[in-house]
Image (cartoon, rainbow, N blue to C red; front, side, top):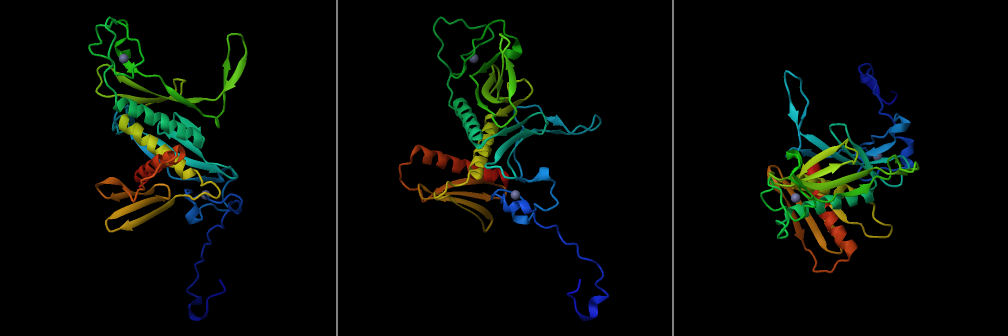
Length: 328
Ligand SMILES: [Zn+2]
Ligand SMILES: [Zn+2]
């Protein structure tokens, strides 16, 4: 240190440790807005080449309502906690678009989705939740046989033909699964009876299930391989859909030349306020206060016709706000 002057030189013996310099690769791959390292110079020249990655903290959904919990304690002292689903964005050095990572705390499942696949999957989840929430009992055909165990009509979304020989565990209403392909992951080999093989992407499935004596439907998410199955209450599935859609919105840069949304965060008195403003419809406002319910307000909303794309953007903005609440 040569820049100190005068009397204190002898006392100033401790050396200042310089923080490592910013990584050179940032110039070629600048941090997106959502990268947790962007604001703090967290990418440094010390990064291992495999760690040239923009990341963010996960948005989590605890599966507390409909799924078995996991034991994080010991035999002597069990500690039961709900399994958590984690979703976040991840973008490697020079990658054109982030991918969305979906994993659970059981370490059993790890999926990578493109933003388009994530949006489609969020839509699938939301459609199942809406189907279950607005369901009514199906009107059975007059002479349709019904097994003795089935004492009431199926919900209108049930696609199962129930029989008297169903095992008690299988006495369940289900609808047809929807699925998305996971095209950024390794493809799997399928063999035909004729001996030919071909490669297909793994898929992520979702469907509704409700045991005939169960109070409410669940959304089942699985990989089609029997390796992973998550059971979500309707509220948890709605929250996961909101998180995924919010991440898609966050990871999608505005098209060149297009006006992106104006997003701002501020602290006003006891509240935290997040605003999304768009010329098409006006302003959405999320207000959070410790210990108080979150409120999403529609402010100065224009009486306007929206194109399908703008309407989808409107829906995504609301889901983005809800995901913001989850992240707080
Ligand atoms: Zn970064
Ligand atoms: Zn049924």
